[in-house]
Image 1 (cartoon, rainbow, N blue to C red):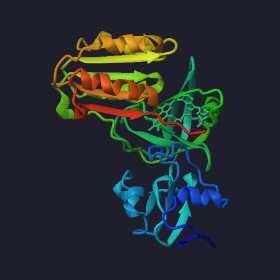
Image 2 (image 1 turned 120 degrees about the vertical axis):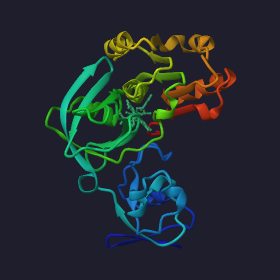
Image 3 (image 1 turned 90 degrees about the vertical axis):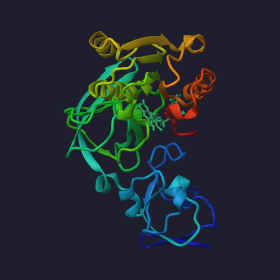
Image 4 (image 1 turned 135 degrees about the vertical axis):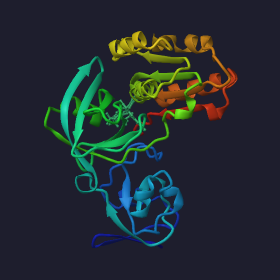
Amino acid sequence: MPELRLGNLTLHAHHGKNLLDTLLAQGQSVPWSCRGGYCHTCLIQAQPGQAPAEACHMLTTEQREAGWLLSCQCPVVQDMDLRLHDPARDDLSAEVVSVTPVDNVVILRLRPERPLRFLPGQHLALWLDSQLGRPYSIASLPGEPWLEFHIRRHASGAFSRAAADLSAGDKLFLGSPTGALQYDPDWQDRPLLLLAAGTGLAPLQAILRHALESGHEAPIELWHWSTSDCYLENRLGELADQHSQLTVKLQRRSTLADDIRQLRIASRRTMALICGDPGFVEHLRKPLFFAGLPGRQVLDEAFHSRPQ
Ligand SMILES: Cc1cc2nc3c(=O)[nH]c(=O)nc-3n(C[C@H](O)[C@H](O)[C@H](O)COP(=O)(O)OP(=O)(O)OC[C@H]3O[C@@H](n4cnc5c(N)ncnc54)[C@H](O)[C@@H]3O)c2cc1C
């Protein structure tokens, strides 16, 4: 039975059993959210070399070298010396600049204590305290004076409700940016199809702005489906006025199935990027494939939430 040493506690685990489940079952308060390896809220530090590869391959080289692992992805296969993640000690702090509600979305702007390196389209874990953290896509671009996030309010959502009550000057903590939903400068002459539902628009409008700033000349079509008016309608309208290669289609979620049937792929070289809730992302994959886009030309990110 492998031993888990945590501070001055020694716990015992069944060989091969999941580390997060083992710690929770033995009364340790380890934060977690998606349990799929996407959100990075269940980080735990082990001694370098103790983490199995499957528990850390989604982390940065720096994180891996420092022994960090995702406990939801970690089978216990040997003795481990562990330290729980503490956002106040391990992460970057940030101050709230503004909190702007727009319909059911909160636009949150933060000023990190020092500049954060990230690529447009990436996401990071936002922490309100040592237990309450969730991943959110960065909606701003590097070099802008604040970090922006678009947080959809859920009636019983622990983080999204608390985010709506934040005020200027409040403090949060920022995990490391991660994620593969990004614009590649080699795509400059390829049509882009950006497909977003709800706050899935956050990373896709960042990627859109990055592409336009990088001189993307081929046609770009951005579709956004929402249950109410698009919360960024004005911003997207201004961009479309300024860039003739950009077409913006703001649709209601109720028309999604019809809209997908009418989607036309402009060229076999089109790159499609999809972001939104898991049901939306799943719904779009097959039609794009049947419309002639091979899997390698489709990048997607699903906003997996905490399972009940
Ligand atoms: C990589 C990644 C990036 C993300 N980026 C964003 C982003 O930019 N903006 C954003 O708004 N969200 C984003 N999310 C989702 C976000 O992390 C939270 O899951 C979401 O805000 C709900 O958190 P909560 O604490 O408010 O709700 P929780 O307390 O976690 O859940 C409370 C209840 O709300 C339900 N619930 C949660 N989410 C949904 C949903 N989408 N639809 C229906 N019911 C739901 C839960 O099932 C539960 O019943 C992202 C998720 C991932 C994995």
